[in-house]
Length: 254
Image (tube, rainbow, N blue to C red):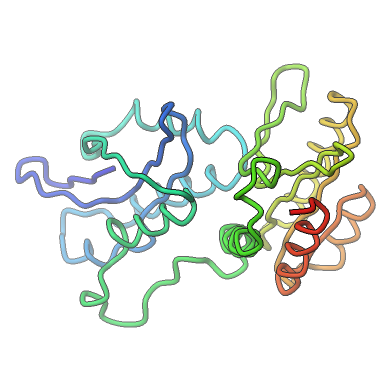
């Protein structure tokens, strides 16, 4: 996605990446992690871009409805925004690939940085937790086997068609379904309550004994951990993610 603050000159900046699979379904998306290269252009509205980025990332990390939001976003692009021609890539891992593309197309090149780089990962953010979990699971080879772990699994949890996308899912040899989801520190109590509600409704609708474990920063409060435990939801600290990934590998017999 390109931002052209001056339509007359045709100058543009890459501000977002949209990654689709071969069937046209959204696999992942990222917004520019910083706007350093644009600050020297008086026609650029940095506050507007920051608001757009915050809404984009919040909807992406919410875990539900992002594909529909993205379709609506693309259909209603402002005059200063447009999409480039589609390019094809061959990649074994979408998570690794989109991070590479962010470095190529969105992040400020090191030579242009005037000071310490703005962190791509927000401390305490859900994105950081999910990325660390993805890396740990990948190191154990959990994504390589068709009977291993799946990513971005959408489930229906309401009679009216409500859906939610869990970060990870796998099935035990006994066919029990297990979900894993990253939890950020911001509004952690609200996120925990939401996850507990979705899990309860999904269990009721599917009549399955599905389980859920959240992965969170070590600083996650005891009150949130207690809330999760009361609903039968496990919690794994980020410092213990490697051991947790290994336990799943053993559980699946991979």
